Image (cartoon, rainbow, N blue to C red; front, top):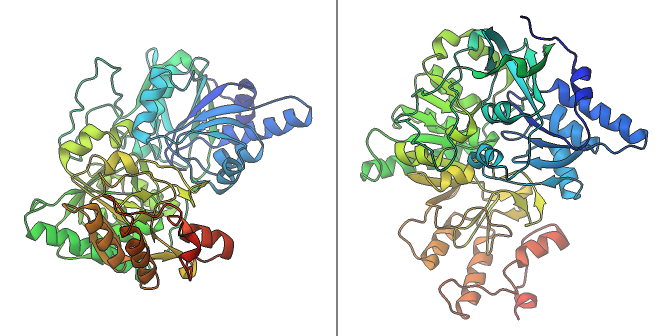
Length: 503
């Protein structure tokens, strides 16, 4: 029996005010795009007619403009979890127009199964192929795993498939679909090395739960990456030197570590620079997102195998993977987010985490999500999943942003996502702050060394003033956010006098 063909508008018409939809994908990669765009139009029409219309959305991570952007602009979002990067969505969240919950990505599918987040009514899944096998349907996902197995199993109203011809069905073997068991019957995840496969290449559901299939041909809403610049190149070299030094000292094994890298142009450039260092051994990747640079390193033979949740790559890169899938088939695997970010696996196989900080305070606490502690920049994503469980956890950042008006090293982080208990090193273009086996005051001395030279005297002055107050960690609470306050008032963190803040 053939699956029912419907339009995206037909699919949107099925979704009612107050319902919750679960989307495939992880970052803009692999997410359903047609139905959400039509749902935004429906919301606008309902609002124009004076009727309420809002939905809640669960995803693996962020989506693109046709999802988070269009729905938030249409005032169609009530609740949204877990991760975000979309600029329009960010604007509406910071205006308190969307109830947004930022969660560690490894927990998302589990919290849905536990019922903490409420009921899932619809699963909307992007697929490169769908097959009927008896009374079952095999759904072959596209560029990301996300939370697709969980939302497909739990959606009470049914499953909508966007069969997207942009994604080649040649990639049907890309995924390894495995869902964790519920507590207290959860068994160990049997992954012993990055390339292991433990599940199926498809999501399996009862065929009669598929309400309709939308045929489309829509590219992923991929973001272009900035080229490496002198700062990111130097940070990459500093990371390579640090890891090689650790290897020579016997602090990391001679076979090297599995590498994880976060999202964004900076992370892409750093991993690319690391791969270009000839002294770094060929390595494996166990991560959540795979970007353009490591895909090229697979081609070059520098990356032996790569496990991820999504291919967050440019469309040119993605099409290249599809065209050469025979080459990539045994080197690349995509997993659901609860497996790609699984703390048990990360701790077992030995991962070096490389994530990006917005700011780091003098004692090594890291803010990776909020500007000046209040405005969301992006969600926490999987950075805590990896940082808290890795063999070696590293945060990288340029020492300044916005033309030098903002220091990435500050007296006290305006928001803390990662406490210093889990942060092993902070690396800027000025070097490495190795925070291991150091007291808090020793950590402060290390971090001042990697701050921008313009800010080192300010940070040292703060520390000297705070030392007079005593304590295990030194702070003058009335002055702890003086640099942030000066930025908000004058547009530049470089305050000239601490005196007005000392009380």
